[in-house]
Length: 187
Image 1 (cartoon, helix red, strand yellow):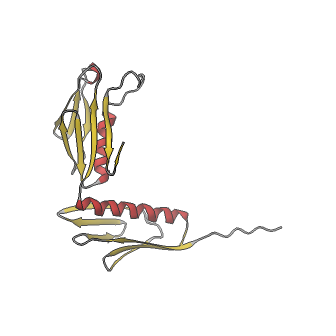
Image 2 (cartoon, helix red, strand yellow):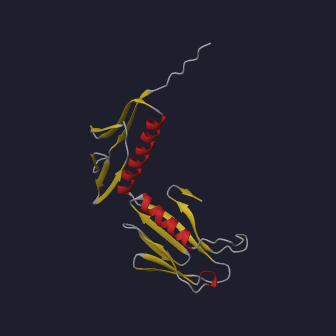
Image 3 (tube, rainbow, N blue to C red):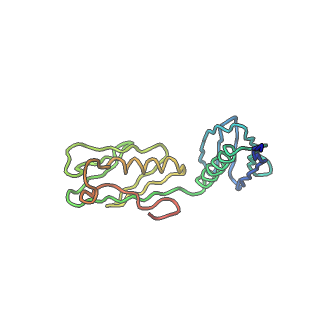
C-alpha cells in the first residue's frame, strides 16, 4: 500500500482598510504608517508574501502559501491594524503601586521611573521609559500611554519588572507595581 502525502498549499489574501487621513508606505521590508502628525515604522521578514497598496487598502497575498506564510500574514495584518489604530487614539496601560508595610517612593527622573524604598531597600530601582511614551503618576495609580502599542507595553513591563521579587514567598511579600488594565481589557 503506497501512501502519498500532498502539501495543502493555498492562495491566500488578506485586505486591510486604510482610513482617511492615514498614509501607508511600503519600502522593501519596512512599513511606514503616517497620520495625525504621528509616524510609526515596522520591519517584517515577509518571505514569499506580496504586498501592494491599491484603492485605499493594503493587500497581502501569497500564492501557494504554507502554514508559515499564513501565520506571517496574520502577524503583519495584526501589527498594521494596531499601527493604524494607534494614530487615531493612544494605547493606555494602567498600573497600580501596591505596598503592605514599607511605602514606596515612585517618581519620574529624566527618561526613567525611579523606585526608592522598595521593601525598605536602600538601593534605587529604575525602569526605562521608551521613546514617545507618556507616564503619569497620580498617587498609587500609574498611567502609561503612547500611539505605539509595543512601546507602551514594554514601558509598562519595565515598571512591573523593576519591582519583581525572587527568592521570597509572593503570598507574604505582595509589594510591587502591577499592571491592572491593558488596552481593551481589565486584568
